[in-house]
Length: 422
Ligand code: HAM
Image (tube, rainbow, N blue to C red):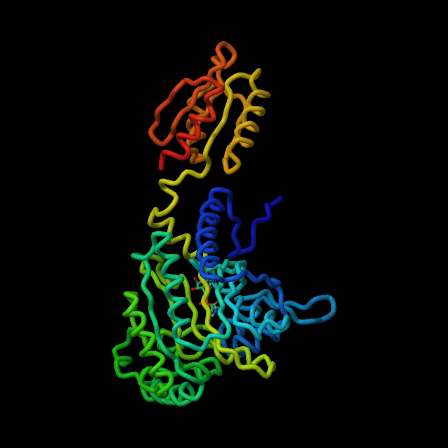
């Protein structure tokens, strides 16, 4: 019988991958916590009409990429293609709108796209959403927060920040008209479906290499005073904080809820799927949920799969990191119970200790290989010496020094290696 594999574009994460994921998750979550962001969790499934309304009926995501299905009651439901919509739904539903909020969420998102490197049907995002702050300073805080994450992950040099302003709704209506006329005049508008009419900026990306596009009207020349000043301030503050960026007037986001500031971090390392994190302001989204409230908001989401491809491709991160402190093993069948009691003694004595045990294999070289694979900092071997003279072998895998020590000295020797080295 043919074996049944995972669904196309949806992947398993094996233990060796999960180690990298957990390390990255830890750095991002820890940074968010330090900036005062709180985690929110919401379901993977929502009513289809929620996404239709928030992301836009004519957006590519709603039109072509949603996983929609009917439940047994005939209710149309969808797997979430992104988190902003659910986050807004949740804070309205639970009356959290009345205070300012800095929130984050993490989990799988689903889009029926053609799978390729960096483009999956189930992928993971860490999303960050801020509600109640209208000032440009929050745009800066968010950009600085993400930049800090890149720095902590050692990724700054692989990523560049692109910014644009798409102004307010009124500006965009006017600009879209001009853009459509430009595309028509240049015979570039083959397809006049609603997707394009409602957001002709999407064609900018498609035709950006054409020389004709040098003369294309740019949204940045259509901004009203308020949006223009906001965009100028954003640039000024970024300059003040020494954040490098490119103004990309062709930058357009795939979701319809944005206004004014939009941004993306891209890399030249990943081919076509080059956006690692994207977001922007969405000051009108809350109001569009019929809740009689206008709440300024801004957010972005990091795509974990793309981030990890970038990290692995450049051999960053885990190369010199130890994932466990001790790999404790024995080379004699008779020593198994001693291994268990020593491991528990060490765990009791050093509560933060990461210790992995293996029982009985008579080849020390095999154990050493295993210790390197586990990325252990030390290897403790309980050998024949233990029975004869109460001695253990302690190997420091940082400097490859090996010593034979009395069992009673193991704790002090181990503490020296774990906390003095590195
Ligand atoms: P987005 O640009 O659609 O924005 O997605 C954010 C990130 O998710 C992308 O930059 C990319 O790294 C990753 N991503 C998107 N689609 C895929 C895919 N098919 N496979 C792998 N990775 C993917 C949003 O989703 C907005 N909700 C972000 C936001 C939050 N805006 C405001 N707040």
